[in-house]
Image 1 (spheres, rainbow, N blue to C red):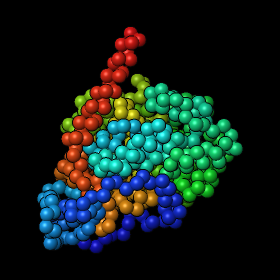
Image 2: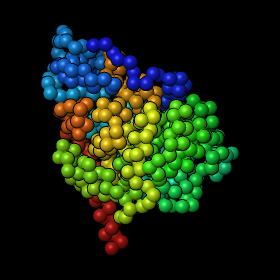
Image 3: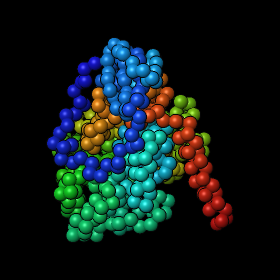
Image 4: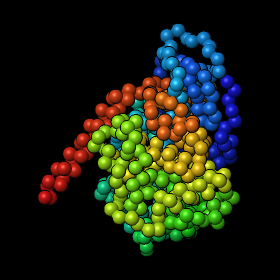
Length: 458
C-alpha cells in the first residue's frame, strides 16, 4: 500500500517549533511483540483503504499492504472484517487532571494537548504517560498567559488550587515565558478575552502589545504561541500579534469575513471546542451523545449528568453554538486547518467530559459541513502535523502504533467512531476494563468529597 501525501506538508513552522519538552518514551516493548490486522478498513489519517493488512512490531507500524503477507510467528491476529482501524485520536484542547489520561484512552484518545495546567499535577501526568502505555500521552503549555482577575480566574478553587502566575506589564513577559519553559511547557498559551462573548463586559485581559510580546518571546524560545479568544475582535488581536494558532473558534457573531481572511493570509489553524463553548453559553451541547448507548455505556453512570448540563442555568448572549458552527463552516470553506478539541476541564466537567466529548465534537464538525473523513483528520493527522508530533497521527510505516479499532465505518458515519472495539498505544493493547475501573474509582472519590463538603456546610 503506497503512503499518500500528508494532509498538510510539514511546513517550516513545524520544523522550527517542535515540542521542546516531550516526556520520555513510554516503556520499551518486547521486540517479539507483534500484532497483525487482517482485512480491515484503514483510515490512515488522510485516506481510506479497504481490505487492508497492517503489521505492528515493537510498538511501531511495521508494514501495510492491500494483500495478505507473511505473519511473524507468535503475532497476535486481529480479524478486521467489518471494522475500521484508525490512528489514535488527538484531543487538541483539554485541561487535564487525573484520571484524564485513563478516561481519554478509554474512548480512543491516545494523545491529549493540555492548554492550561499547573506543575502541581502536570508533572505527575507526564510521568504517568511516560511510564505506562495504559494511559494517553500528554503535552502541555503549563500556565497560560493572562492578567490578574482575567480568564480563567473564576476557576480558582474549582480547578486551580491557588492563584496562578499572571502578567501585569509587557516587561513581565520575558520572565513569564522563561518560567513556563523551566516548567517544561511544550508551547506558550495566552488569553485575550474581555468577556464580550459571554456578556462579562470589562473583564481584565491582555493588551494587544502584551499579545505581540508573548508571541515574540515564545518564538525566541523556539515554541509556538497559541491564543484563547472567544470573540472576533480578540481573534483579530491574536492574529495581528502573529499567533501560530487559535485554540477556540470565536462565537460572538455568526460572521466575521475579515477575521477569516486574516487567518487565511496568516496561514494559522483553529481548534473547534464547540462542546464547551455551547455549554459556557448555557446550551446543552452534550445532547448529541446523551441518547447514544454506544457512548454512554462506556461512561461511568455518575458522569451521565455531566454530559447533559451547562456551566450556567440560562442562555447567555451573544455567544451561541450556532455562531460557532457558522464560523467553523466559513473557516473550513476558506481552507483553514481545523483541529478537533473539546476543552474538557476536570473530572466532573460540565457539558464536556474527558474522552467521550471528543466524539461529540467530531459530530459537531460534521454538522458544520466537514465530511466524516475531514472530521477524522481534525482529530488525527492535522493536530499531529500542526503540533510537530512527527511520530503519530497517521498509520504509516515507522509511526507509533497508537491505534483505535472501531466497529462500523466512521469514514461514512461519524457516529461509528465511538463504537470502540480496542485501543493500542505504542503497540500495546490497552486494558479498557482496568482503565474504566480507575475512572470509576476516581469519579466516586470526587463525588464523595463533594457530598462531604456539602454536608459540612448544611
